[in-house]
Amino acid sequence: MDVFSAMQTAVSGLKAQSFSLENISGNIANSQTTGFKRVDTSFVDLVAEQQSPSRQVAGSVSANSRQTTTVQGGLNATDIGTNMALNGEGFFAVTTKSGDANGQSSFVTGDTYTRRGDFALDKDGYLVNGAGSYLKGSSLDPVTGQATAEGPIQVANTILPAQPTSTITYSANLPKTPATAKANASQPGTELLGTLASGANPAILSGTGTATVSAADATSFINGSISGPVLTAYTAGGAPVTLTTRWAKVQNGNAAAGTNDVWNLFYANQSTVLSTNSTWTNAGTAFQFNSSGQLTAPAASSVTIPALTVDGVNLGNIQLSYGTGGLTGYTSSGGTVTTNALTQNGSTSGTLNNLSITKDGKIAGSYSNGNTVALANIKVVQFINSDGLKATSNGTYQQTLDSGTPLVGLGTTSIIGGNVEQSNTDIASEFSKMIVTQQAYSANTKVISTAQDMISALINIIR
Image (tube, rainbow, N blue to C red; front, side):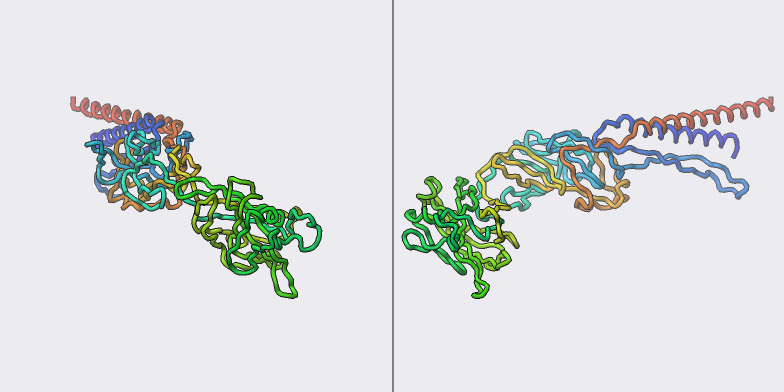
């Protein structure tokens, strides 16, 4: 290497350090850009000519960009329900709008990818981030939960239809000795429902059956039973119906005879009158408990209440689901029913109040009827080599041969709603790199000045 080669090498150093400074300036400029990934600089030495080991020279230098797409930025809470941040690797699949015609939006085909999650609804119900990218995914039917369309997610502000009650989920403990209101309740056997005032006995002692309590017998029935759960059920049109129930013990177990404790569940047929004026219907199943208080029959984890009718409204066949171990018959000091769980799956119609993001990548809508329903699945993709993606404007990336093909799914990543990912630029670190870059740049200029002095000295020899 001669003096002229040294000057060329110093020039390559100036170019490399200028390239590094360009990256540093870009990182600092985007230190507050949502989802921005800083660009670091890698330096590579170039050997201009091959020499023997004893004559090797340092050679020139080249600078390349090094992406940091896998380096997580900090999460910043925004309290905006549709904002979202990826906690882990991966990218949101997005697209851009290509135009509007006849009130319909059209979008660019194909996906680009971003970490920028400051999405919000536009006037048409699409989720668009601050850089103008539209979030993609699959829209879901709010009633069935089935996917209806793929593409840019559009949230329709439609009314959620009413849902009739079809299942009641219930778990409780029935006391071994119920505290009934019979006048002679202290005497053995009075805890049982027994024969009513008219001489009728609505008990079902085994299996299933049908039985009713007349309004004339309602008072003696209530005195021989204890309060069960009270809940609101819904018709197909969304009308609320108050369902009042009572439990009655109809048989005491006898180990010698091989019999179990038996309970029946009843419900009131009228909710607009006093319980002592209403007729009552046996739900139709004999619930049997052994001496340990465990349910032995029915063996299934649910039963069907046939044609449940209140106030003249037939709600149809309602499934009473209590699960495994949901109903027990343990001793209770108060002699009352202890309810552990009570829900039903019906509801009135509702309007959309707000949106939120779930960790498993769903957009959930909260409605005025108290229901929260999944409306869309967010499309999140993974790449084997995320740093091989090509960065484009507006915080998006494009697939390349180096990145590999996108793999749809969250993997081990979770989505944090109400947050956005901040830039992963560290200002203090960038300032440190800037100082080092400045010193290296100045040092390269010194090499050029020295080489110039050497060439001037050589010329002066000739003179």
